[in-house]
Image 1: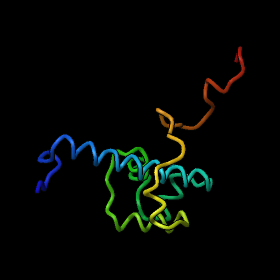
Image 2: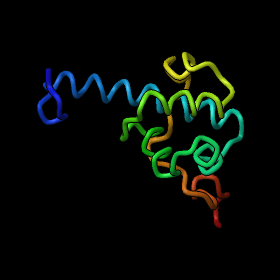
Image 3: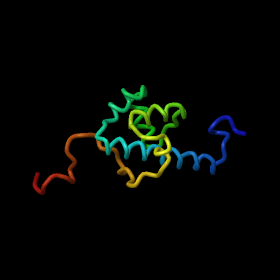
Amino acid sequence: MPTRPQQSSKEQTLRWAERRAVVGGRIREIRLEQGLSQEALALESGLSRNMIIGIEWGRKSVAYERLWDIAAVLGCDITELFVPAERHPSVSPYRGGSRAMNKPEGQ
């Protein structure tokens, strides 16, 4: 059994990435439905905002104990975090301000 990521097969690494993307996408979906910011979720769950960002975008793994903390803040059962999100996040994260595509022509 591999103990380090670099010792894992390419297939296993891809499976893990897919699982991180499913859980992270679902966390993001529930958070947005509730109008919570990443900062608020981070503060209430005891994680850093950067960690929340990494989890939501499937870039970072999280200890399974922390999933209970996140689920508690979101007010959902932990099993809801493993259901694929209904909508996929945009390709690039929204960084605030106004988006060029939302502006009327000529502005």
